[in-house]
Length: 154
Length: 130
Image (cartoon, rainbow over all chains, first blue to last red; front, side, top):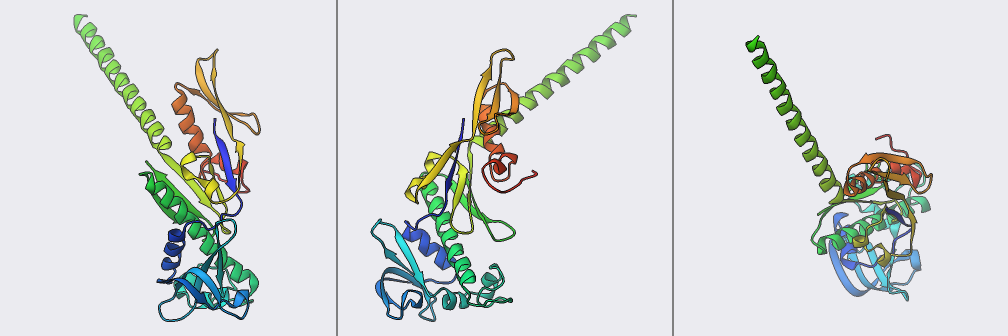
């Protein structure tokens, strides 16, 4: 009597969930409505609604509200990734900035970083939604660091 | 002779008590399983921010993007056997039967289609042996 539900790719809709995910990666400095250097979207700084930086430098991830009412993430994924703590970088596939293997700063590695952030933002958004309804929810990661499982209990 | 009768009666009585205790314990375990499974939701978030789960309105996935939903199973009552059963909507195979209550069948189904359950592979590429 049940249905199975799939969502191919979640949008970023919950800013707090985004900030939680960034904080877990060390990007704890939060700025709102500022110009941000984001080489991935051109040489000029872009205005973002909110961004989370590493405390000691200007690298981080920003959110820009789009016409659909959700947020687009912008960053220099390669440079930002290179400032992640080594234990976090180790959980990414080979080729990620700072890890062993070919293709440092390559497109695939940057996509892996972006995907990881989106996965954590989505997980946090689901946890926050359940928590607001009085449920206990927590996120666990599989051994291969490929999936998150959100466990919810009444 | 009388002693044998008393001994037999005592043994039968003790056996009945033990059986009753076992039945009560099984019923409690069954109820605990139903309660545990119906109180639990598991959501899988994939490497690129995709989400997969047995549908639960409370997750509010629609707010995160366009979702696709398909029927997973049917939970029906077998009139002849007077038991509830779970049938896969995709393969039409009877997955489990012999449930005394609908709640028990729904709890079993929730477990079966969880990320750690055998039914997860019906809707994903993953194979679970557990």
